[in-house]
Every structure is written in structure tokens, then in C-alpha cells.
Amino acid sequence: MKLLGAALVLSVFISACGGNPPSTQDDQSPAVPVKLQTLEQGTIENSTEFVGNLEAKERVTLVPRIEGRIMKIFVAEGDKVNRGAPIVELQPTKQQQEVNAAVSSVNLQREKLKVAQAELKATTAEQALIAAEVERTKADLEDAEAKVALVESNFKRSEDLVAQGAQSQQDLAQKQDDLNSTIAQRDAQQESLNTALKALQKSKEQFKQAVASVDSQKAALLQAEAVLQAQGELGSRTKNLQVNRVVAPISGIVGNLPLKVGDYINFAQELTTITRNDVLELNINVKAENKSKLKLGLPVEIVDTQGSTKITGKIDSISPTVDQQTQTILAKASFPNEGSLRDDEYVKVRVIWDTGPGILIPTESISRIDGQKFVFVAQPGESPTGEPIQVVKQKSVELGAIQGENYQVLSGLEAGEKIAVSSILDLRDGVPIASESLKSDNSKTNQ
Image (cartoon, rainbow, N blue to C red; front, side):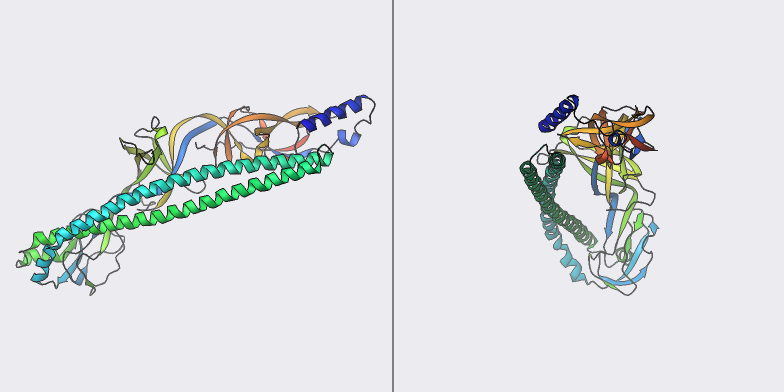
């Protein structure tokens, strides 16, 4: 920049001393075609995005209390059933000694459940640590991306200076080396992030397996206890009918039912699931630094891949403690479901902390020089012949959070101004333009 300034001063000095004046062609250079966007005051949402899997408030796995062959199936997959409704009826084949043997398995099932619960706790802690590492690596990658953008800007500026003779080819080569080194560092950060994401995915799979193991052990324990309670009742025909028929313990929707009449069912074998999904929950781990903003009733939006809101829920539960390992607070959000959501569905949500007035500008309208950010604002000007024209003025701006393809403007621009959103690399301060106006984008913003 110092060399460029010196070159400009020298150019002005030579002109003042009788150098050749600028040509008429330069004075009447053609206008740069650009698209302009008129800035409008809108509502900005201060929010944070999270991802996770929805969970039904109630979900049970149906298992028989005896071995037997299916005699009758009362429902089909997807049916809505009430509590107590019959699901499957079995023809019993278990002998009395098998029932007695099942009694001794109760204690064993309890021990297995304890082991499964301990494994689940360990897996949960490991997943939280890996998730924190992913977030740290993402932040490092964002820093590396920003550094690449800055070095690329310096390199392009050096190319211009070399073309003008204001900088040596050796300096340009150094800038090229800096750019290559910065890109290599950025690529290394990307590789680190990919590795962390793979580890997180593996941890999630282990977590699901641990949850399934706990659920299975709970079901097995319940079954063993049920057999213990049923001991001595096999002589009663009425009692036998109650054991033979599997009923819905809750009201809900019947899950996958891959069975048919005549199939032989083993003791504690999964038959199907009943899920109450009129309201679904999502666990959200909020950073402890946001504890002052975390309140019951805060709106939470499920958003699609384009950032549009699908369903709005709210925070209805907040843990009173902070996780010491992750320094996060567990909050639960609930969402009303009329059929568009599914249990265990992976979703992206946005917690809205507060709202306020603000202005958004497209990311492609930003130019960067020495770490500062600028936009080109359309203003009236005058041609060399005195005719009114439109030119652009380079203005420094302070930017806030980014959402999608927009930045929040903290200072430097006001509603009503028109900024260039195309041909940014062709623009300079005072360059005439031929414009096409666009409507301002008053999208929401994340933080």
C-alpha cells in the first residue's frame, strides 16, 4: 500500500509539472454494469443453530412374556391404538420348568442392565468430548478460511502493483508463496475437521448401540420380573390368556411389524413398538456462557436446508447444573407434531434469543482490504461533459453475524442506501455504473 501511495503521488506530481493529461477515452470510460440492492430496515433474530435427533416422549418396545406361535395379529404397521388394545395373540409352548428357570434370570438381567447403563454413561461422555473437539476444529477452519481470503486479496493487489510497475516480481513471488502456505494450512485444518467428524459419527453409532442395549436390557428385566410375578398362575385359563395376549401399554402409533400368523416368537423377542409422537422432544446442549439468555418458553424453530422455518416449538426444560466436561447446559425443546415429524428424525433447529431492528447485506457485496471490509454505495455523480451519472463510493462497514449468504451490518450503512451486489472486482471508488435495482433481503441472522 505504501508503494501504491508513492506511485499515485508521483503520478500527480508529474501531471502538475506538465506531463501528458489523461486521455478523453479514460475520462469517458464506459459504465460498469452492476446490480444494486436497496437496503431496508428489517427484524434481525439473534439466534444459535443446533442439530440433533427428535425423541418421542413415550416409546415402548413390545415383547411377549412367553414363547409361542402367533395365532392372531390385531393391528397393522402405522395403526393408531389406544392403551390396552390387543396387538398379538400367541399359542403358548413354554413348559412349567421353563417358567421356573426364568425366575432365576431376574437377578442376572438386573446386572446386565447395570452394565449397559454404565456403558451408556461412558459413551455419552465420550460423545460430548468429541463434539466439543469438532466445534473447536470448525472454528480453526473458519479462521484458516478467513486468512486465505486475506492472503488472496493481498496477492491480487500485488499482481495489480506489479502490472503497474509499482512492485517487484520478487515481492509477487513471495506473496504467491504466502498464499500457497496459507492454503496448505487451511487444507490441513479441513482434514482435521473431517477426522473429527468421522470420530463423532462413530461415537454417535456407539451411543445408539448403547441406548439400544439399555432398552433391550430394560425390556429383558421387565420380562423376567413379569415371569416371576406370573409364577404359579399358569394353571388358570384366564391368567394364561392375559399372558398369551400382547397389548399396547400406551396410546400411540404401531411401528414396524414384520410378523405373520404362524411365526414362532421367542421369549422377550421384539414384536413391534408403540410410539406416542404427538409431541416430540430435542435435547440441546447450550454453552454455559449463554446461561443468562436461556429461559423457559424461548422459541425454537426447526429449519430446512434453506434455513426456512418448518415448525416452531419452545424450551420447556432446563437442567439446573452445568456439565463439567463440556461446560454446557442441557435444555429440552418440545415440538407439536401433526404428522410431519418422526421419532429419531435428525433435524437442525434455531434457538431465538431475542430480536431487534437491523440491516442485512449479501456476502458477495463485501470487498476486503488489509482486514477491513468495504461495500460500494451508489451515489449521483457527473460526467466530464456535465451530464448526471451514477457512480459508486467505497464505504467501510462493520459486520456482525453471518446467516446463509448475508451479513448483519453493525455500522457504516443505513436503510435506503443502494449497494452493489455484482461486478465487485471491477469497481473502484468513483467509477461510473449502469445499475439494475434489486429488493433488499430481510432474512434472519444467527449468532
